[in-house]
Length: 254
Image (cartoon, rainbow, N blue to C red; front, side):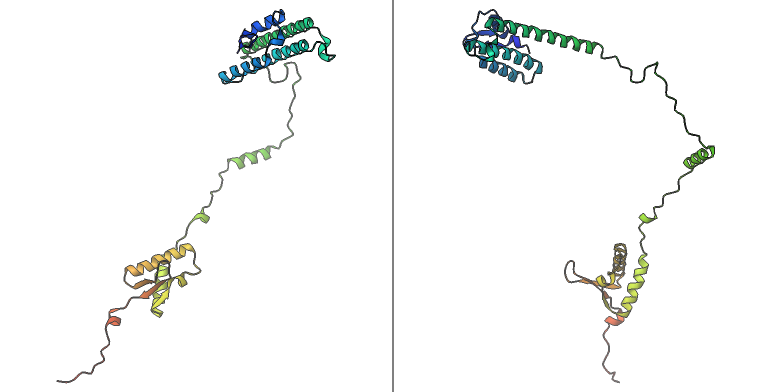
């Protein structure tokens, strides 16, 4: 974005910003009639249209506007005994031209440096001591060959196998709980499954429950539960002799 090409539409001037500076420096335009605030608003609107912040253009614009403000202040207060009256209007115009020329030279120098940097971007600086610098000799402490051999043998030895025994899940046999529940049903007809599973691990409880299901499948027991999640009662199935009613009558001879 070129600041000098900024189009201005002011009450006292209409045209590019570069022409305004030329007329002011040649004293062909009274700077007191120029609306500096309008220039700032026009520049901000131009930046908003671009949608991006141009820091270089902003820096150039601040230099130019600051010089115009200083020159306008000197022209508006000619009779005040202040620091602004140290320069005459002609000298202020010359100072403005000098500052603009100095800024232009700095800008051209920056462009030249950027061009040099881009042209020599494929070069790399040496990252190390100079060729004539003394070389540092690194001396190792005396070493024992036997210690080195032992270290190499330790590295070459096959590491021991990692045991995964602590990760194995050991399931007790279902037959163990089948015998236990059959012996329990031989002593009594009904038992509470939750009471029998109390104190067992979760794996043992699961295997014990499988044993109860196996007894139910074979018809040896009947399962009772009053409600969902209520205690499960295991009842021994009745045999044929237990289901047959006892004969209490007396036989009569014909």
